[in-house]
Image 1 (cartoon, rainbow, N blue to C red):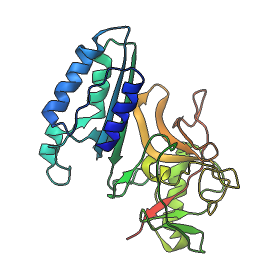
Image 2 (cartoon, rainbow, N blue to C red):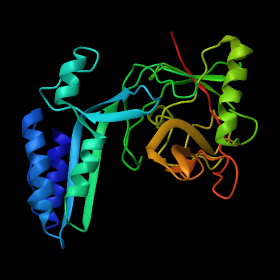
Image 3 (cartoon, one colour):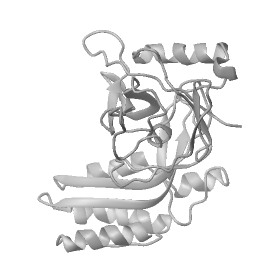
Length: 280
């Protein structure tokens, strides 16, 4: 709530017309989105900003993809009441539909939320814990309590995650990622067989706002060679160029995407894998 008020105040100082709504119910939020699509966003030569600060959750779909939701004040968590969650939560697909219905040339949607996931397969596994993350880390706060275990792993006691200190020896195309993780698991690397590719939220938790002595936007405990790293999270739907996965670039402190296509003219690039596991 404090974040929303601060953003509203900053926008008003810039001369923008602001409508501040605190703790909206599902019905109220859906009505506001309809208003934004057809009234506020009904004028072509207008810029519209939608800012949401609150809880979010991720649903793992049957086809292996993930769908994010924002949670209104009267919506329960998925684990508490799945049917009511489905009825009241608002998906990113719904938000995309709103943006497409609006006629305004410029529309920016900002989600300052928490997201969670659950274990469901090798390269897209995510823990049930919730992580706070912002798209950029300019003002974000990712407090870490890192411990070098002396065996090639680093434990973050703040998040309950154990990371590879070095990650993959070389950068990999996406079709090589599952094989890398499978090898870690089958060999019980560092004594564990539950290694996986991190989610975007998890990998972002390692970002630091300024670079270290090695020129990396992360703790100097980690190897400086792992620059651009794969995450398990897909951006949008499949296209003729394949899926695009979010990646984190620790050499620049930024996020981007990379194609999963491994061959041909539309082949994506190579990124490192920094495997992670959840501490039991």
